[in-house]
Image: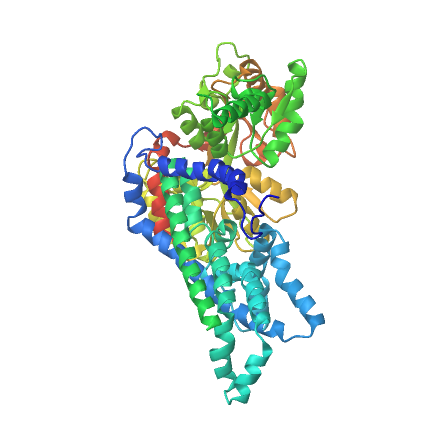
Length: 283
Length: 347
């Protein structure tokens, strides 16, 4: 009889077809992208680093940082609202939980365009928010909510909420309720219990949720352009503008590569945090 | 030495060539016309395609609607075996396509209808088959006195009610150039235009990302007045949205929409025949009528209906009431303007 391999070890060869597939359709285009970014002119005849100099001038850096800041704002808002929601969720009767989870999932089940237009209806001059405030005589003229940074952050937070709430619920559900009971018995206040027991234990969920929300918020091209408007420039729109309106593929390629690397750096930072938090949760 | 790997490679290549015979040579296929999306596609499907098929022995044709820039991207990606035979372009992208050597000259000498086009439409690299006109759009429910001039947008009574688009679109760039000219600039100098847009800020309720997004804002009452494309506004109007289009006294900004034979097309004869059909007075007359309302370029077409009422009664008046812009000059600096707009125009 031949010797059996341990069941947990698989030969790497099995991954070869997928690896080949990825190399061909994912890695190769990325390499092409990087090469295209090294042309100096839109007609792609001269080699040089001018696109990269332009990418990292004051304006380009500004757009990049502003995009990452937008992601941070959306993530923070999602975290505050999402944590409260997830916290309530795990303490609800199961029947109510079904309703809440359905409501939370709703944004994922509707198309992004429909969701975005719903927000335009809510935030517009004659939208729900403005008409309620006007009817209550709290304001005289409609406020400008659409095409503002605040409006965009709120709308993006709504759209990305499931990505934050689901990992949080998962993390909070796994915490043994006896732990907080033990903490109270030992004399800790509710807040102290939250800070010292619940929050540290839910950190892996927080990190996972933040990672997903952040990545989705900074790349949300449709929501950014429809709710933020044409005067707000974030990386996805910057990229679209160069590739589409100006046919300047080398610069568009430089923007994509920069954005890709920036996102990868953020993701790795989150991953490091995640690993640290897991260690913290176990200790 | 024949290794297992090289054998595998060879067989994969052979297999692929068998599965996709088009990889080797330009393959015979039906004519593909990349028209624009939305109402343009509808108009071409309903009027142009049947006329073309009747005139050409029932030749097969596929409409593959997409934006100008996407057409250019697709053809650039496969120059020797283009997936499109006939392209349709706004003035800016048309010049890009010509500059990048993606199109063939139209055989003017053999053409029956080319000489009947108004001189502005006679472009040997690809004739204009219709005009798009940009004028002032407003909501007649909220604005009782119809605006008459581009200058009206700066009136204090329109505080927080004006909508424009950014420069990504032909409409946005055309608008900037037009107001630059109004305040003493030109296609080469849009300094006055940027200043004017900066002065417009108190009135601006929205800078939309594209003309489509701008048009929907009238529906939601977000904006009440702004520059708008004649055809886009007709569609909204037909759906019951309270919008009206007026030609400002400075003239409507006009864009030539040109049609081109793609270089290296395997269907050159049919491509030329399609362009011929698109210039035919019968086709252009039908397209001018409701619900299409597409502005004709053939002088043999008699203007009627909404177009005669709002834009021009005949081609002589059209020449006077339409402002054509020099897109060759515009393209030279457009990239800088787009960047400057992003930097300076913040609401």
